[in-house]
Every structure is written in structure tokens, then in C-alpha cells.
Image (cartoon, rainbow, N blue to C red; front, side, top):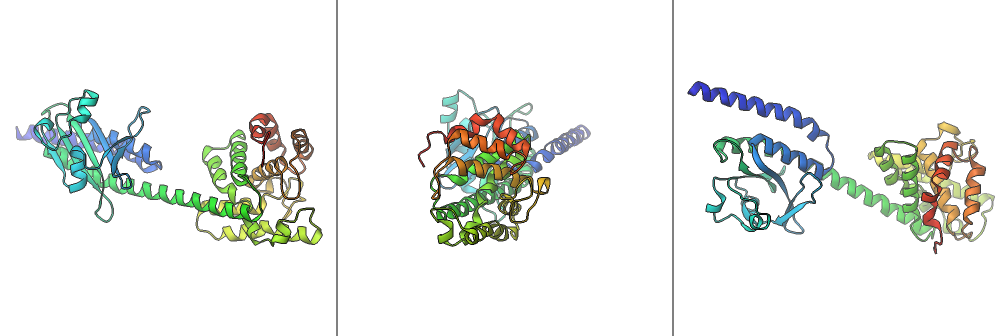
Amino acid sequence: MATEEHKNEMDDSQRILHLLFEYMPKIASERKVDRLLVLMNDLGRSIVRSDRCSLWLLDKEKRELWTKVAHGVDELRIPMEAGFAGHCMTTGESLLVEDAYNDERFDRRSDEKTHYHTKSVLAVPLKNSVGKVMGVYQAINKQGEPGYFTPKDLENLSLIAVYSAKTVESTMLNAELEATQRDIIHILGDASEYRSQETGDHIQRVAEVSYNLAKFMGLPESYCQKIRLAAPLHDLGKIGIPDAVLNKPGRLNTTEFAVMKTHSVIGREMLRASKRKLLRFAAEIAGTHHERWDGTGYPDGLKGEDIPLSGRICAVADVLDALSCPRCYKEAWPEEDVRAEFIKQRGTQFQPELVDVLLDHWELFYSGYRNRRI
């Protein structure tokens, strides 16, 4: 009997090892918290052979626990003190419950609402790097013999919870950093727009046009998203241009135009020293979106494919918005004149393929500019 029990333990260890090898590469490469939760839920369910498994995370502001499940279902939320998960969250204690209905901590409302029958429950706290409980791993209804969770199941889920907590904490931190970075980018972009008295959402429009140009060029979605995030900083250097030049209600003279052109270099230098890849990418856009396909642009006179693709794309987006909206020195151009200008500048100011994409999808790109009152 002891030999048979030992064999079963070995078989179960092999099964768990196989699951870890299957799931860990997927988990390590996932950067979205909601998709990470789905993977963790699936892994936990398979590890302890439960009918259901949820990795609940704490939303401090709402004082709720939330999770994400597969198959297109929206996130689920419960009060942070509710039921077994809430008890585990508030006490930091693991729970091993053989029959939920014989336990006073059980919140029956969920079963009554869903007509599900909860029997055995396993709950393990998720603790962050400083030992604070950040969520709960909960498994419901053991499948197969003995029909309830065992101390071995608790041990296995606890080990997975340690890894899960570190992974989720890292992913959430990265998500927070990315969100903060996006906010900073838009704040800086808004600052440059405010200084140049360009009303409306110029930077957001340029970002969206740039994103769609990249998408229709067949570029990877990761690149398309990157240019959408970085494009709002294309004119950051205008912060360093004197008001008398920046907001002059007429054509600039030669000296003034020379000063205006320095905004490309100013923006590039402000951003290029950053340790953040996205901000360095924004520096590339800031420094090259006034270069021209024929080599007569500024600040460096780059030509053709020597101009970074990001600069080529943003150049089209920036000019489309500049021509289609009023500025302090001009009225908005009529639609037919805007279209004619891009046809004229195809292969001169702009990369031919980008102009072709713009014209092929003209209705999508220009529809937002019709009847604008900016």
C-alpha cells in the first residue's frame, strides 16, 4: 500500500511539473493583467483539480476583490470581506473547507444567484514583496477522489501562490509605470500645444492618424501602439520657442523661421537622454517629423529611407492636421485642396507609399475634419 501511495505521489508530481512547464512560458511572456489572471486561474484549477479556480486581486479604492475569467465574461467583483475569499484576504490565513454549507464564513448569496452548489473550498492568500496580502487564490469543488481538498492540495496551491504573487505584482507595477508614462507624455504634449495656442486636440489627432497610417502600412500592432503613444511629443520642442515667434499671426520672416525650426532639435535633445525606450522613440519623432523625402527638410536634411519610419509617418499626420484645421496664422484649407497637396507632395515631401495609404483610406482619415469648428 505504501508503495502504491508513493507511486501516486510521484505521478502527481510529474503531472504538476508538466503543467508548470506548459504554463510558465505563457505566464512569463504575458504583460496584460486580465489575461494573466485567466492563465493563473487555469493553472490553479489544473494543479489542484478543482471545478473552478479564481485569483482575486484587491482593489483598495473600491474595497473589493476582482478577477477576470475566460470566455468573454466581464470581470467579477465581490466585497473584500465577503465569504471565504474575504476572510482569507482580511486575515491572511489559508482555508481548507470540506463542506462550505457547514461553515459560518460561507456567503451563500452567490450560490443562490447562480444556482451553483459550493462544497469544498481552498483559499490561499497572495502576498506582495513586503508581505502585504494583495489578493486570494481560491479553488472550489475538488474533482475526483476524495471529493474534497487535502493538505497536499493546500501545499501545492500555496507554492503556486508564491510564484503568482511575484508575477502579478511585477505585471501590475509595469502596467502602472506604463500608465504613468502615458500620462506624462500627454501632459508634456498638452503643454507644448497650450504654448502654441493650438486649440482642440491636435496632439491626439496626430497620434490617431499616425497609428492608423502605421496599421495600414502593415506594421506590427506593437509598433502601431508605440507610435500612438509617442507621437503626442512630436512638437515638445515648441516649449523652447519664444511666444513672439510661436504665435505670430502671419508668415514668419527668415530669421523667425530659423528660430522656429530649432524646435525639432530642442524636442529631440529633451527626450533622447531618457532611459525609457518610449521616450527615446519620441525623441526620434520629434527630431525627424520635419524631414522631407527629397532631402530638403530640417534639421538634418535626411533623405528617403534615411529618415526613420516614425518621422515619415508623423510628418504625414502632422501636415494633414495642420492643413485641415485653422491656426493663428491661417484658416483651415478646403478638403479638396488638402487632398491635392498630398498628391502634389507624393515623393517630394512625403514617402509615396504613405501618401497612397492616406488616399486609399481618405474617408477614414479625413471624416473627422469635416465641419470642424476649432
